[in-house]
Length: 114
Picture: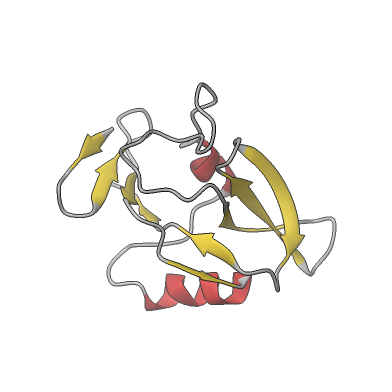
């Protein structure tokens, strides 16, 4: 991980640039609104992108300490095909992936391509 000292981190493996701190807590709809309101190319990550940050060698949180990360679930931009009212999230307590109702208040971490 490369810490740019400006609140962003680049993952050297994927080339993705991440906000170092989770943006806000809210429903999936709020997460999607952040995507539209974000300045520049920032967006809510896909499941695969967010899982790429998981460090399964760590727990509580399961992420590189370069990131300010709550041991909580973070929304992805992907809806679950299991139900139109569920979307995928990644739990940085242990790196698990799950689908929750879009009405849940989870955290959001924005990403952009290099």
